[in-house]
Length: 295
Ligand SMILES: C[S@@+](CC[C@H](N)C(=O)[O-])C[C@H]1O[C@@H](n2cnc3c(N)ncnc32)[C@H](O)[C@@H]1O
Image (cartoon, rainbow, N blue to C red; front, side, top):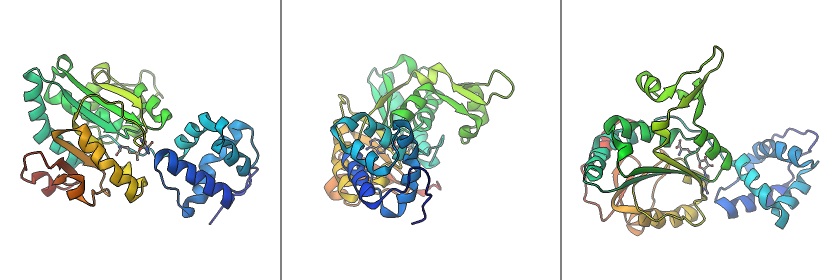
């Protein structure tokens, strides 16, 4: 292990094990020994914020009854929040070509439609979905449509809700959409673009741990849970599939990230409907046209 020794010293093996166990138990994320120095550097500012001088005191505190609030800060420091607008383009092709036309029919007949971005990070995923809906269905705000965007990390949920992005984070948003759905920076030197209200108003942002209860009353037509379960072990992943299936409309869609798979689809009762695209076995089989596209 390469380590940076500073005024807080090293993250010793016992403290690392205690933090790794706590993280796994609270949110399913596996911290492997090889990442010890990265975890040390991610947690350094938490020791500083608490006025602690060594990782042993930090691990004792965060694992204790009084460490409840700190656990949220710790999880926030340990999660990987990388995301992009229109990441894994093929899912948005399926959304535009196959799903939105069905949702539009349903909504125009007076029914509701719901999409869940589970593990939404800084909001690029739900905002990409919302822009696609607005493009295809400009009157969507007058219909019973909503996107739920959730993440365990309170920091990213706040950022997403704010909807202010520096220009470098807008990569992936085509220029016409940038002009239509974002306000430009007001002063020279300011590079913050703000998402406009009609996009934001389609989304409800909430803090939610996928391993906890899901206070969800209505089934979703589509669930995006991409690049989230990759940090979980097989047992945790397998415990999530039936929950996603129960939360999905029988004809719904589940999108996973590029290196995520449902290993045992028979037990999970899903079938492959495209590249990392799954549908409940209750859904009518579709030609696999989205799997033939490049991502
Ligand atoms: C790499 S980001 C993926 C963002 C987006 N879905 C995408 O594909 O671009 C992974 C997100 O999953 C969230 N996450 C990790 N464990 C979670 C859990 N147990 N419950 C809810 N969200 C979790 C992290 O906070 C992080 O924001």
